[in-house]
Structures are given as structure tokens and as C-alpha cells.
Image (cartoon, rainbow, N blue to C red; front, side, top):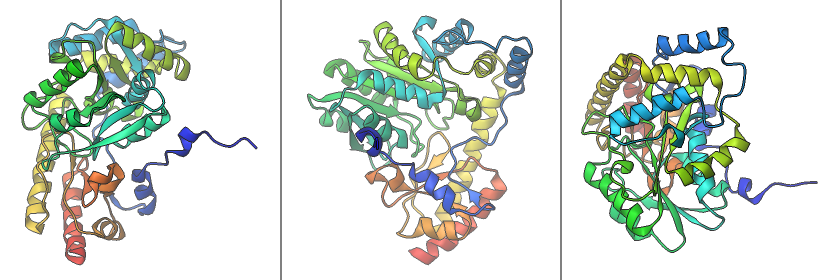
Length: 373
């Protein structure tokens, strides 16, 4: 019988999913990376209007509708101050596909891709699916990405390095100085920087910066998404952008893998980008309150945790058996090693849940910590 490709045999189902399946139906879920806010009404209405008008019945351009790409370009001009041509934007099936096409278009078999460790689970798996070799780069003690560590890890086989700020699973936000260094490294070493910016709007301390703001060459590709910016995870609408030649190659992958992003989702995302951003401020303020509740609770328990500056994740240092003890008591948290060897001795907590459940979960975590310390 036909067996399986070596590439697919090198990856497995995410450890995050294994944790979900081990938990009961009534468990408090601190493992899911999903905002608990509804999609903005004007975004939903735009999709409904497009469907009812018959505008969503056919394929769009491979890159996405021109009006959506113009809205994306306007967003990045306003937020990053860059002159982005809508022709250099590809609308994708979420940030996940954007990451996939970025790596698939630039990484050959045997090439190395430097990834943060701990880092988002897809970086390792998507690199392996290209035939490339993921090279984990340890984070600093505060869980930020260290440009010096990236630069030290570069070899003649390095095709790309991935940066992520605000970060998943860490909640860390890279400083302007560090982001300038990421751009310099891409320029001077002539390697691609893939910047994953899907949590761009969820920053509590400091500001978000993108390497593409500072790069002097075309060696930066940016991945973003409506999923976390506007609480639209189920709509599966992201985007990727970069220089002409890079976009043309990424489009080849996207064209054959996806043809185009979902048409209704494109109309919804355009409306979210052009409409009232009040929900963004509301979500950020709410996540910051929840972060503070979580950190105060950890301090009372005695759990050490670097302060998350963005996103809605925390990565406390925990004793052996803590994750299992939480799950046994009905609270889902994710073991840090699901995000790389550098995550060992940590757990990832998503505080994208309501404050009452968060406080209840802290009581359970206190019991779990006492039982395992």
C-alpha cells in the first residue's frame, strides 16, 4: 500500500489538542487562544449583505478582493507608517495559512529556520512540512526574543528566522530596540525575517513595532490576521505581505492550496478594518484587567511568572505534575513543553475567559500548586 510522506511523519497533532481531549466537558478552559468577545456587528452585517447580494457566490481574485487589500494597506500605513501597495497583499485562510505560504515559498529541503523556543506550535511543524529544519532559539529569562541569540544561531544554511510580538505562548512584547535589531539582522545576513504580528493590537505595556518599519532591504515578510485583532477566529481571514518578488512566489503556493480566502470572510474583515475600532480598545482593556487578576493570584499562591506585556497568555514557572493536577481538578492549562523544549517547567495560561471563571481557576491552581510543589 501507499505509505506516508516523510514530511508528514515528522509532525504530530498539537499537544494543545491532547490537553483539550483529556479535560472534561465542564472544565474551565485556560488553554484556548481565542478572545471571548463577539465579532463586531458591522463585520457580521457586511458578510450577510455580501451573501444576500450574491457578491460572495464566486471566487475572488487569488490575492483577495481589491477593496479588502486596500483596507489592509491603509491599516498598515496608519499603524506602521509604511507605504504598502495593495498589490503586495495576499488575503489568506487565517494567519495559519499566511505562515504556511511564507515558509513554503522561501524554504528548501535542508534549509534551517530559526524559531523562538518556546514558540507557537506551528513554526516547528510548518518548517518540517517544507522539508526544512527548525532550529529552536532560547528566549531570555523574561521570555522575550533575544536578537543576539538569533544572530549567533545563523549559519550558511539559514533561510529564515521567525519573530512573534506580542508573543504566543509568552505574552512578551519586543522592544523597539530589539525590533530594529531583527531588521538589521535580516538586512546584514541576507536572510528572511518572518514577523508574526497577529496580536498586534493587544499590547498593555510599551508599543508594537514591526521589523518592516526599519528594514532597508526586502528581507521581511509580515503575517497578520483578523482573528485576534477583531475576535474573528472562526472566519479564517488573515493576510501576508512583502516585496513584489516574495508575494509572487507566495501567491503560487496560495493559488494551488487555497485559490482564494472565503469571500464572506473577506467582506467581514474589510468592514472590521474600516469600521469602529471600539471593540479593540474594549478587548485590550479587558485582557489587561484579567492579566492583573492572574498575576495577583499567582503572587498570592507563590507562582513565579514573567509579566506578560501583550496578547492574552501568561507562562508561569510551575512544578512537575502541576498541569496534570490542574486538569484533574477541572482546569485546562497547557504544558510549556508543547511549545518547545524551552517551555519545560512552565505552563501556558490563556486568560481569554471571564473574570469570575479566572478567579475560580486560580483557586484550583492554588490547590494544584500545593499538591505538587
